[in-house]
Length: 101
Image (cartoon, rainbow, N blue to C red; front, side, top):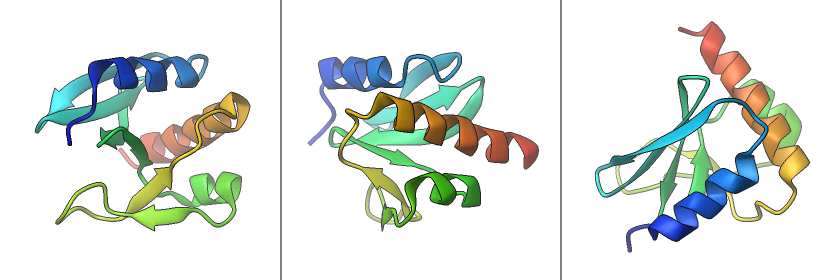
């Protein structure tokens, strides 16, 4: 089931404060960028963040699951209500991914 546009907007609102955020439609779902670093996808209304060591340090023991069949496992985030932790995770993730460019 594709992600509802209102759900995508709500997810982006939860991330507000992490940096310059944007998303774009990708294969019927959404890719998410922060400060022009592609770091996450939203599939079936669920946020999946690229796995990094920095992200693992924030999450502890994250749930790893591919966002769709054939994809690499990502950190699956079901609870987005702790905005401070979400922002910390995003900043840590894009910090590590940005250095890999």
